[in-house]
Image 1 (cartoon, one colour):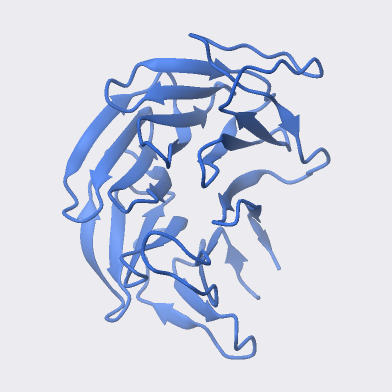
Image 2 (spheres, helix red, strand yellow):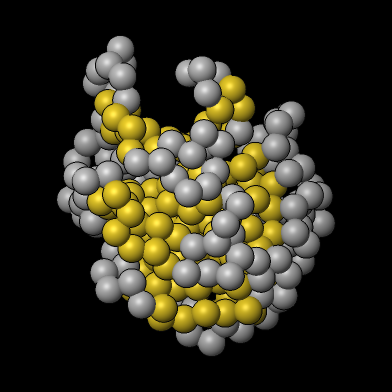
Length: 258
């Protein structure tokens, strides 16, 4: 590639919208262009979607891959693109740029993080369902996929917090990162969640019974449970985000020229 890619998202192999293949790759970056690659035809040029109003920060598929959800790093809002026409058909308004956007596994909610707020939107009618104020500026949030009764968020204060979906009350606070947290995601089964930080590590936090790991300081609130596992030790470049695929394997995404 002769351009800079900020984010990339591959179709999961299966899931809530009847996806059974992984041959399409969606990318975007500072060029403000959304590109769709066919991985079965690596030599074919990508399809380019109409230009984004700002540098692309996040991308994901929804509605059986008929809709693309994107946000920009320099302006607020989440935009929904019709894949067939390549045009923006809906904008979910936010005051601050959206640094994280996720579609829930059951297809009901869009989870966004902007500034110090985590919002949940109806993924079919696009109305705002809930909005929770966070104790700090957050960069990423993820809804628990199995029951949808809690969500995890991380950001500038280097802590990874778990909150109640309905009330927004803090359930747990996990410490261990030594830099701002740029991305958090639950595993497909909800038994763990991962956090990627500017400190060059990805940590896996368990949602089962509390297990203390003596290798790192660990604190939990209100009976929070978790175990820290360092899975990337020598990452020299700042992690902008990663995607946990439906098979449970994390896929790192970094800003850089290829």
